[in-house]
Image (cartoon, rainbow, N blue to C red; front, side, top):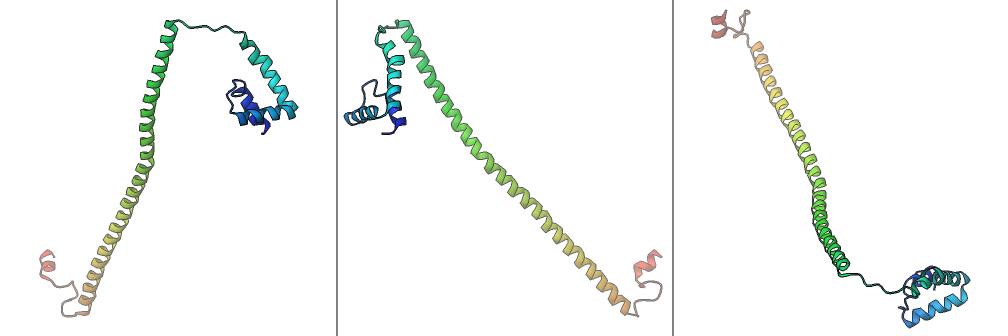
Length: 160
């Protein structure tokens, strides 16, 4: 058994004689072979155990016991309430990243929609301009419609 484990057991189960036979034998064997743990055991016996051997048993009054019971009940209720609040906080904490992700996706969708509509508007304008240029090109080639002072349409003549 390692020294660290023996020292833990010396402070707890070994002093209270709560070890099973196997562990008790292992601790005793270790104490016989390890001077450092034996010194630690003697120190614990001298400083911790010996003063308590001569202590008399004191029974607290009913009023003290009632105060202890009330504190235990208060702490249990507080722990339950903290448990509920912790669950609510955990739920909200989980929702924050999800909401952030949804917001980012919506923003991207909106901006890509604007780009698509801008592209669609660009195509519409480009088609309109091409159509008008084609009309102008056809008109310039048609010498009968053009009389030198304009296209010779009735609206032109009306306005001029």
